[in-house]
Length: 365
Image (cartoon, rainbow, N blue to C red; front, side, top):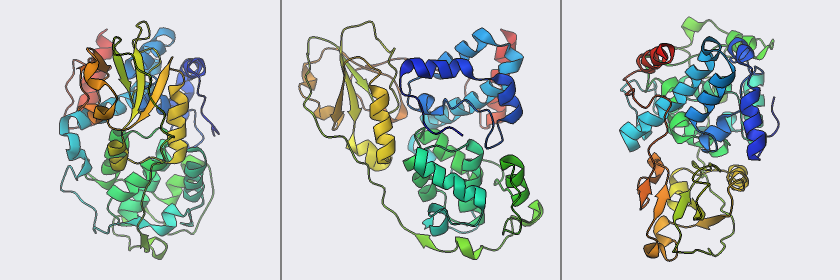
């Protein structure tokens, strides 16, 4: 289990080069498996998907890289789905909703008191380090939405709030996939599955039943109580900007912290933290601190807490540049082309159909 994530760009690049593809393919579904731990840097735009793909293929054979590229493609698929549906991803994308529409957080899930030892340990790990294995995220989402019969929206916001690698598209659409509102069926798991992938031996829980009984399982009493919660973003102290309008203005945000982006040009570099964005997508103080720390890899970066149109002397800049992202469509100025691994392949209705085309394009090269 990782206890902390490196901050410096050189350390991050070393992580890319250390991913063991064979170990990843063999163990990635286990909670202590050989995953890459690159997700915080992909989510925050320190690394790009094509950058990681290309670095990977420089040192390993394509057939060994396929399992990892498959998972990267899920991230691209989710991002491009957000671009396609925009705010539509925050409502059920299909009519396959949960059995009930209970609204709220389940007290014993957010309190790490479900009685499922591994689940409770993973939730406490989420609070402690801001990261849990993807398989654990699926367990928790299924426990809340399908077993706990609570609408996915507020629990997904709770998880996003605590994740260092919080990616709106991946988090939102993964919860929808688990809840069956972005997939053909709901995702269920039982105690046997948890024991297998956590290498534990717990028995006698409310999930210690056969798979076929899960869809009709009565609401377990331990998951009955709902609570409301307000998620608050704590911003860094506001500092005055020192800007030179004769130079380009480069806008960064919590999804673009790429220290190599236009590094060769002399420019004003501003990390923009818009309160309006964080009202919609609040993050914990731990996450905000992580974002600020990652931004220190960018030479001469200045942090601005405010809306983009509140940047002083904004109207005086002849050149304003940013990377494209669904959350920053409203930025003024010019935007780069999106950086996709499979730019020439349009996302399909299902991930499986999209991946088949992507895999075919890899093999043809």
